[in-house]
Image 1 (cartoon, protein in one colour):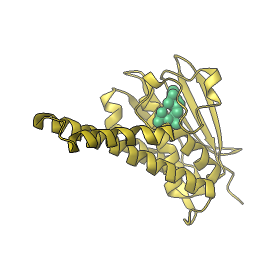
Image 2 (cartoon, rainbow, N blue to C red):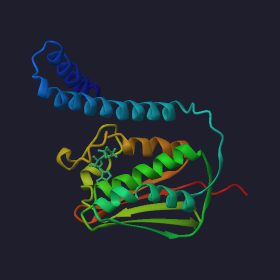
Image 3 (cartoon, protein in one colour):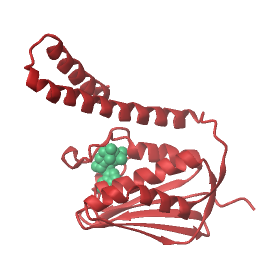
Length: 213
Ligand code: ADP
C-alpha cells in the first residue's frame, strides 16, 4: 500500500495547493510536471500489478505457440538498444536457435525485464550477454551482465514484490520486474537460477521444459 499511496498522496497534495491558489502562476508548470510524473509512475505500477495478478491466477486466455528463444532475445535487445547506448553498454547475443512452447507476451515480458535490469544495474561501458542454448535438460536462456551484482543475502529476496537491494541504486523502476520474471517463468514452466557476485555482475538463467517428443 505504501508504494501506491506515496505517489497518490503527492498528486493529491500538489493538486490541492494549486486549487487553493497557493501557487504562483509561473510555478504552475513545475507543479503540473510533478503531478504528471507521479501519475505516470502510478500507471506503470498499476500495469505491473495487473500483470502479476493475472499470472498468479493463471487466467490468461492466450494460446501457447512455438517460439524461438534466440529470435525473441534478438528482438528484445533491439528494443533496448537506446537505453544501452546511453550508458555505453555493449549488448550481444550468442548461441543457437532453441524453440519452446509458450505464450509470446509472457516470454517477452520475462526476457525484457531481465535484459532491462542487466542494463540498469550495469556499470558505464559494461556489457550484457544473452546466450541461448538447446541443452539436454531443455532450451535455456542466460542473461549475464557486468554490473553491480547482488549481495548473497539479497539473492533470495530480489524476486519478492517491491524488494530493492539498495534504493539509491534503484533504476527508478517499480520493484516488480523480477516478481514478474518469477511468476512469468512459473507460468511457462521454466526454472530460474541466479548467480551473482557483488562488484562483478549477475547472471540469470531460465531453463524451459524439454519439448515433448
Ligand atoms: P526494479 O524496478 O527496482 O528494478 P526488480 O524487481 O526488477 O525491481 O529488481 C529488484 C531489485 O533487484 C532491484 O531493485 C535491484 O536492487 C536488484 N537487481 C535486479 N536485477 C539486477 C541486476 N541485473 N544486477 C544487480 N541488481 C539487480
